[in-house]
Length: 107
Image (tube, rainbow, N blue to C red; front, side, top):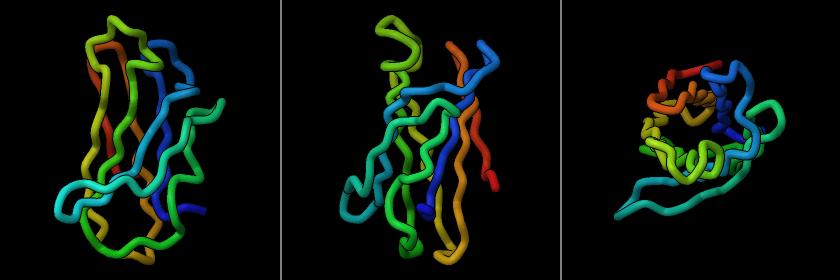
Protein backbone atom coordinates (compact mmCIF):
# COMPACT_ATOMS: atom_id res chain seq x y z
CA UNK A 1 0.00 0.00 0.00
CA UNK A 2 1.14 3.54 -0.68
CA UNK A 3 2.44 5.58 2.24
CA UNK A 4 -0.06 8.30 1.21
CA UNK A 5 -3.68 7.51 0.34
CA UNK A 6 -6.79 9.63 -0.08
CA UNK A 7 -10.55 9.36 -0.14
CA UNK A 8 -12.86 11.94 -1.75
CA UNK A 9 -16.45 12.10 -0.54
CA UNK A 10 -19.11 14.21 -2.24
CA UNK A 11 -20.99 15.64 0.74
CA UNK A 12 -23.67 17.31 -1.42
CA UNK A 13 -24.64 14.03 -3.09
CA UNK A 14 -23.90 11.81 -0.10
CA UNK A 15 -21.64 9.42 -2.00
CA UNK A 16 -18.00 8.79 -2.91
CA UNK A 17 -16.54 10.99 -5.63
CA UNK A 18 -15.41 8.51 -8.28
CA UNK A 19 -13.16 9.51 -11.17
CA UNK A 20 -11.31 12.44 -9.55
CA UNK A 21 -7.74 12.72 -10.86
CA UNK A 22 -5.23 13.35 -8.06
CA UNK A 23 -1.47 13.94 -8.05
CA UNK A 24 1.03 13.59 -5.23
CA UNK A 25 3.85 16.16 -5.27
CA UNK A 26 6.99 16.58 -3.14
CA UNK A 27 8.47 19.95 -2.28
CA UNK A 28 12.15 20.33 -3.06
CA UNK A 29 13.45 23.34 -5.01
CA UNK A 30 9.94 23.56 -6.41
CA UNK A 31 7.28 20.87 -6.65
CA UNK A 32 7.90 17.54 -8.33
CA UNK A 33 5.23 15.01 -9.20
CA UNK A 34 5.70 11.66 -7.50
CA UNK A 35 2.54 9.86 -8.58
CA UNK A 36 -0.88 10.25 -10.15
CA UNK A 37 -4.09 8.28 -9.77
CA UNK A 38 -7.84 8.51 -10.26
CA UNK A 39 -10.29 7.81 -7.45
CA UNK A 40 -12.08 4.49 -7.78
CA UNK A 41 -15.83 3.79 -7.43
CA UNK A 42 -15.46 4.15 -3.65
CA UNK A 43 -13.76 7.56 -4.07
CA UNK A 44 -10.39 6.16 -2.98
CA UNK A 45 -6.87 6.38 -4.37
CA UNK A 46 -5.07 3.52 -2.64
CA UNK A 47 -2.10 3.22 -5.00
CA UNK A 48 -0.77 6.77 -4.91
CA UNK A 49 2.99 6.59 -4.98
CA UNK A 50 5.60 4.56 -3.17
CA UNK A 51 5.22 2.72 0.12
CA UNK A 52 8.10 4.78 1.55
CA UNK A 53 8.77 8.52 1.42
CA UNK A 54 11.29 10.63 3.34
CA UNK A 55 10.16 13.19 5.89
CA UNK A 56 9.21 16.42 4.17
CA UNK A 57 6.43 18.55 2.76
CA UNK A 58 4.03 17.08 0.23
CA UNK A 59 0.79 18.03 -1.44
CA UNK A 60 -2.15 16.35 -3.06
CA UNK A 61 -3.69 18.17 -6.02
CA UNK A 62 -7.25 17.16 -6.90
CA UNK A 63 -8.65 17.99 -10.34
CA UNK A 64 -12.14 18.69 -9.01
CA UNK A 65 -13.24 20.39 -12.23
CA UNK A 66 -13.26 17.01 -13.97
CA UNK A 67 -15.74 15.81 -11.33
CA UNK A 68 -17.80 18.96 -10.60
CA UNK A 69 -17.93 20.30 -14.17
CA UNK A 70 -16.47 23.16 -16.17
CA UNK A 71 -18.51 25.87 -14.40
CA UNK A 72 -17.56 24.76 -10.89
CA UNK A 73 -16.39 27.19 -8.22
CA UNK A 74 -13.47 24.95 -7.14
CA UNK A 75 -11.68 23.66 -10.25
CA UNK A 76 -8.77 22.41 -8.16
CA UNK A 77 -8.19 21.55 -4.51
CA UNK A 78 -4.66 21.43 -3.11
CA UNK A 79 -3.90 19.96 0.31
CA UNK A 80 -0.36 20.53 1.58
CA UNK A 81 0.87 18.44 4.50
CA UNK A 82 4.04 17.37 6.27
CA UNK A 83 5.35 13.85 6.78
CA UNK A 84 7.38 13.68 9.98
CA UNK A 85 7.24 9.91 10.49
CA UNK A 86 8.15 8.11 7.26
CA UNK A 87 7.13 4.77 8.80
CA UNK A 88 3.54 5.92 9.42
CA UNK A 89 0.72 5.66 6.88
CA UNK A 90 -0.75 9.05 5.87
CA UNK A 91 -4.40 9.10 4.82
CA UNK A 92 -5.67 12.50 3.64
CA UNK A 93 -9.44 12.49 3.01
CA UNK A 94 -11.28 15.33 1.30
CA UNK A 95 -14.94 16.14 1.87
CA UNK A 96 -16.07 17.97 -1.25
CA UNK A 97 -19.13 20.08 -2.07
CA UNK A 98 -19.79 22.53 -4.90
CA UNK A 99 -18.59 25.57 -2.92
CA UNK A 100 -16.31 24.20 -0.20
CA UNK A 101 -14.10 21.38 0.96
CA UNK A 102 -12.57 20.17 4.19
CA UNK A 103 -9.79 17.75 5.03
CA UNK A 104 -8.17 16.08 8.00
CA UNK A 105 -5.55 13.49 8.93
CA UNK A 106 -7.32 10.19 8.54
CA UNK A 107 -6.38 6.69 9.56
